[in-house]
Image (cartoon, helix red, strand yellow):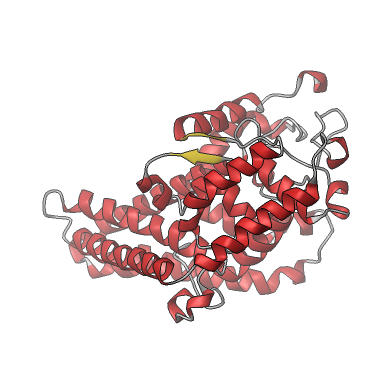
Length: 363
């Protein structure tokens, strides 16, 4: 929660003269225009990504089985790392948003899709698709603000453990899939007396089942298949998981926590119009500029602004929507937070270091 002495987040009542109805009209028009274009091209794209991801996973796991051959371990770990990133970002995240439900392809059905991390898809869809996308950057509503214990903005209360948040952030990044899973469990609500422990049993059972499967697959089954190469396969799988976790965490933090990203009050959400919702998504999200490979490997979350405005549009379309969104922002006098990967990630790291310490007025 915020602290009485913390710098206050922006409130909709303090906004400059913004015509929210006109803003909504402009963005709705862009949405409908783009939605009408969605079709075979988008389906071919995601199926091609799926094919490449599967090839890389098979190639990676095969190479790891032959780790005694010079270069095989490095090649296998590299291929598997990329495969896990593609599964998580361009495939899993976007499929679970329902971006490809219209294809009626059972492999792309958001209700049935399961991805290659320890957090089960059902738990993710509730806390991410509903909670985060509904309450984006609203204090005490959007638990993704610093994932509860990383202080990423001066509007958060400083607590004693923030002094160690640089190493804590490093650990969160390395084991991000586990952080996501326990984040979905919301055990802090039990500790605070908001929820009874038994209310967490259904999600705890789902998570335990998924965690057990992931641990068995990567750290028992595939190593066992490798015989005397088992230790190398174990380490290769662990390295690939950490690489995927670090990349995913980095992209997500760059999407909402660079300098200039705004936070909001709960009171602003209560009577929020469609235009105000669009406004909040615009000001609470940030883009990353880069080469096509970066957009694909980030699941097009490099276009976080467009994703938060239009979460059910196939992500590859964000690239063509971005210039139009930027024009609309300019028309309405609104900022459009974008920059290179180095700029945005550098800003995130700077803020994590900076907010390890109390605001001056909190001392």
